[in-house]
Image (cartoon, rainbow, N blue to C red; front, top):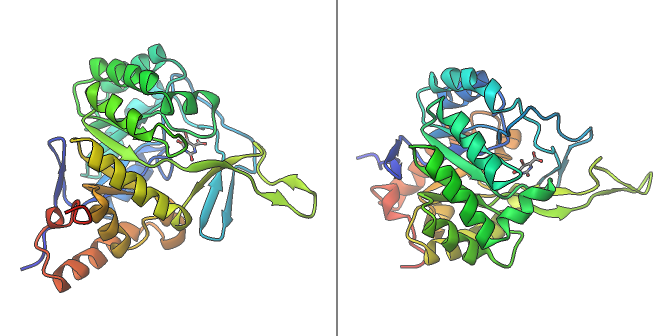
Amino acid sequence: MKPSLETTLAGVKLRNPTILAAGVLGTTGKSLKRVAKEGAGAVTTKSLGIRPKEGHSNPTIMEMEGGLINAMGLPNPGVDNFLDELVIAKEGGAPVIASIFGGTVEEFAEVAKKIWAGKPDMVEVNISCPNVKEGMSFGSSPELAAEATDAVKKAVKCPVIVKLTPNTDKLLLVAKAVEDSGADVISAINSIGPGMVIDAETGKPFLSNQVGGLSGPMIKPVALRCVYDISSHVEIPVIGIGGIETGLDAAEMLMAGASAVGVGTAVYSRGIEVFSKICEELEYFMAAKSYKSTKDLVGLTRR
Ligand code: RRO
């Protein structure tokens, strides 16, 4: 019998554990629908704020050995302009996760209230953007993280995911604080940084923002460690993100303690087919090792 890839996150059923991570192909309903049709278990929008934002000027992203560095600066159409996009995204048939961002607790609450009108399946609270000042302060303060979580929980009626940053020494305090404030799921990690790339020709930083966040295979060991630590510390499920490109990467992340995996940078390296490829490879690995369900893998490293 084929192994089962189904997974459930806070009552939301996913046909497989791959999730389009926030920030990639997530600014239109059409692209989200396409990713869902390509086989992703769920799709996440680009983080949406209270008003439209252009983001930083180019260059905002650079390919490097082992992944990417980015400082997009939260370019997004604004929550009000995204409600129609959500309708289209849902036509893809996979659960839609709306990622939201706020500069203050009140703004988080306001964006959450607005996005709830579009009935996303889940809301992800981005308290971890390394490229805007406010992003980092929420993600590295247990108190602020708890307040943002609580505000969003009160504004929506669907499960709430909180996305954590690895760029803090308070990771586990933040994880516990958001769980205690009612978060249903934790996702980890956002990009690592800030990092800098210098152009030797000019002697200047490559990115217009000077610094940015690292993603892709180069951050996988950090992501695995964070997911292992977080899932050992809290009861709620974790979505593991960071360097997942193959079925084996996904298996390792599940073993570290994740219940599902986010895929972002690998869309650039393996194409939009990456979701079905990961599932095929994961299924092959599980069959070869006689694992019947993804549940058999979750947290295996700790058992
Ligand atoms: O838009 C960005 O610069 C960005 C965001 Br909001 C985020 O959460 N993580 C990231 O690497 N870039």
